[in-house]
Image (cartoon, rainbow, N blue to C red; front, side, top):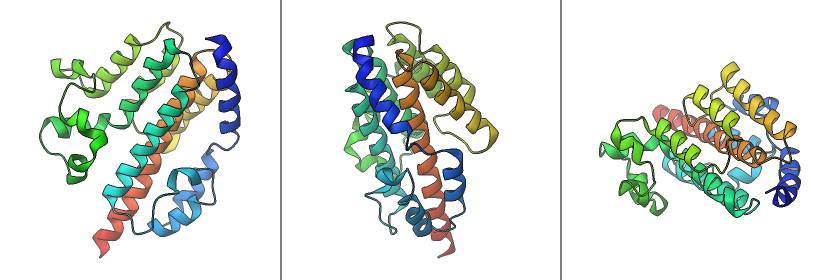
Amino acid sequence: MRVGLVYAQARISARLERHPEAAVWAHLATARTLAAYLAAARRSPVAPWVATLAAAATAHEIERAMRGEARRAVAEVAGWVGPRWRPAVGWLRHLAVEELLPAMAAGEMPPWVAADPALAPYREGGAAGLDRAASGDAPFTAWLDGWRDRWPDPSPAPVAERLRELGSPSLPEGREGEAVRLALLRLVRRHPAESVAPLAYLTLVVLDLARLRGELVVRRLFEEGEG
């Protein structure tokens, strides 16, 4: 995979130059309304992720848009790596959906989940490949185990360890979230020509998109509650 990683290394290096740092998130957090947050986001490194969102977007539209961005990021990075690693890269697309699985299993899906064709495999059960969840494992644990099964070698173990410590597909604010974020960035920068680099980078992107989704949704719901 080292030959193929030359291209991945170049792409990741370019993307990290405009990846949102802690100061960016802190600045965005000062926005009180969804419109103000989106305005600030469009002047920041997260601008491509919110390009299609309007200030009047509903919480459901935000959910769908951000998870769509995560799927696009996974597909993009899958094109940077060799065939042996594509199953492991592709498995990261489930990370953006994992937190929805318990509600789906309980038949408590919000309307936007039922209306999203991209989520049909999850609604039908089993198609997502998270079959361990059916045996009693938590969906996040099942996802991590399934991901490990798809590694051609154990080099991504440090990424999985960080995710297991996090215990969630979302990257929280504060020291815990920042520690995980910095650890993933360190893996990318210390091992740019190794197979762990694209996986650590993509994991960081998916987690950041989950964080962005949460920031946007909470503002929309707050405004709706005030209305």
